[in-house]
Image (cartoon, rainbow, N blue to C red; front, top):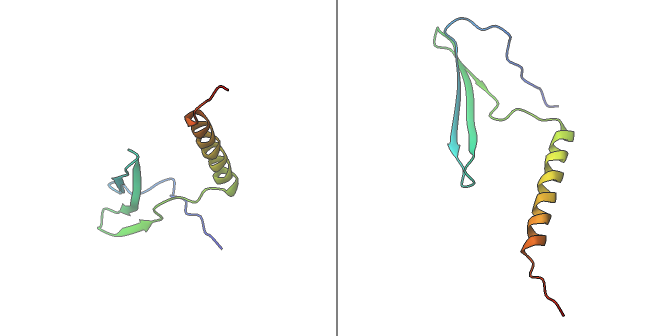
Length: 81
């Protein structure tokens, strides 16, 4: 069973929220790691990517697949006979 992780509303003063990432060939940034560093030096690792509801993932895939189908439809040569 997947557990969701929610940051607390308040953290001690001086706590740092660190997000490390790297560029992708598409020009976006991929998150590699996320973590909290508390003032006393403790480090708490967080999931690299938050979990999304399945419905949101399906919607994104539908939109992406629709955009791809439009792109390939425009790329086909049109022949008059």
